[in-house]
Image (tube, one colour):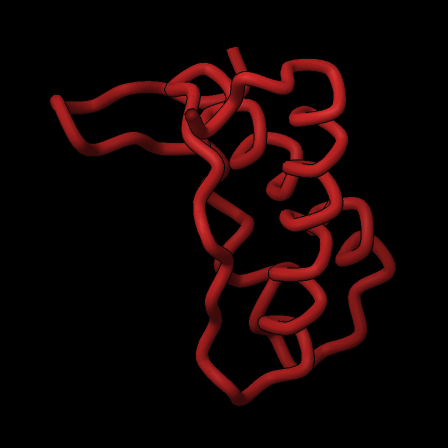
Length: 87
């Protein structure tokens, strides 16, 4: 599974290291792969729920914009395979 439901409106991606890896000031060569994985997990969740959400993010670290763009691209790819997504 790409995500794990915890409650009716709560899920986890079950990656205990992602918060540190994502926001650490230290250089992390795995950050790009981490963003791709998180974006795919979020897009898969949205596809499963048949949702096509608007993507918004808080201005701040560059990583926020990068992750938002990656999620947007993944959502578009899922929508191309499933045009009824979000209807």
